[in-house]
Image (cartoon, rainbow, N blue to C red; front, side, top):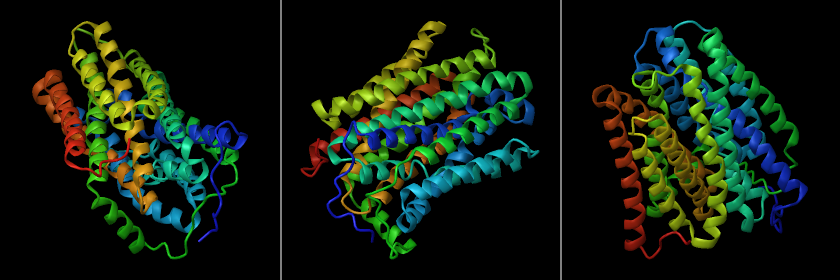
Amino acid sequence: MTDVAGWRGHDRGTPEYRRIVIALGFAGVATFAQLYSPQGILPLVARDLHVTAAQSALLISAATIGLAVGVLPWSWLAGRIGCLPAMRIALVAAVVFGSAVVVVPGFEAVLVLRVLEGLALGGVPALAITYLHEEVRASHTVVAAATYVSGTTIGGLLGRIVAAPFAELGGWRLGVGVVLALCAVATVGFVLITPKPFGSRRSEQATLVWAAKAALANLRNVGMLVLFAQAFLLMGGFVTVYNYLAFRLEAPPFELGAFATSLLFLAYLAGTYTSRQAGGSARRFGRRAVLLTGIAVMIAGALLTLATQLVAVIVGLVVFTGGFFAAHAIASGWVGARATVGRAQAASLYNVFYYLGSSLIGWVGGFVYGGGGWSATIALVAGLAVLAAALVVVYAFRSRRAPAS
């Protein structure tokens, strides 16, 4: 194993710390812009490929399923070659598969390539938090992790908002292709800016069996399971709202076009702000309090989107998004801080549940929307958030070994 004895991590404010945070911002753009670029133009995808709303949402679910499947193998590879080289390989491979998505004909072929694209992209969220814990001083990781999450919101926003106008001009493939070019530039930025790693932990004994045992140890920890449940339930509800809101807003009484609906993704900027604020607030009030507050805000925002006035829907979406990213920033960073064995595997498992929630609940939400409309969809989303909060509260009261705040 690489000798990291005495290494305490880069201090906040140093050039290396800034380079790490900026580089991970590029990685967040390259990952999440590519992952979610079809989401704001799903109605165009549905019409072009002659599929239903739920089927078109499979473009998102296919990629996120691939990502969920890929995170544990990526954590194993990082154990062999280090987090930074693994993330570089992941981003380059994702650009290659993404390039194929925009040229292959047929719905089925697109879905297969989106799975492969997701598998490649799994190397970034699986390893980014672990990389931070290896390279940044422990006292600064909660802020650094929240800053990274805020960067991912910018990636998600760019992917959705850039794709829409080009898709209206030349079809959804053009829109996705332009985003892909942006991701390729961000990948180059990540490769060039990241400083030499000093805390990287590599082991020739890091076999797949070893990775599986480390993952199993985390799955046996009830406190970790509560955090994994946050990822599954909250992300599932979040993606459901963003998957099907465009369909609602294209129908009466709103009747908005693809570009107009894509502008609603500017609500992601609320997440950029709240995810960073959540890190600072957690140091003052404790992780649990901030997590529960984020969930409550998320529920309130979801209920506001039931309004029939566009302004109220927009306000609700902004509130909903801000609450989600505050909760996600706390839960994801908490996993890395809590893990006592297999930190990379713990972070990977969080992402497995996160993207399984996105894939499964995001897909099922299409049937709920088709059968019961927007009211039923929001009932599903709010119910998932209430369950997530209940798990946190119940665990806090029943276990003396609850995660330290």
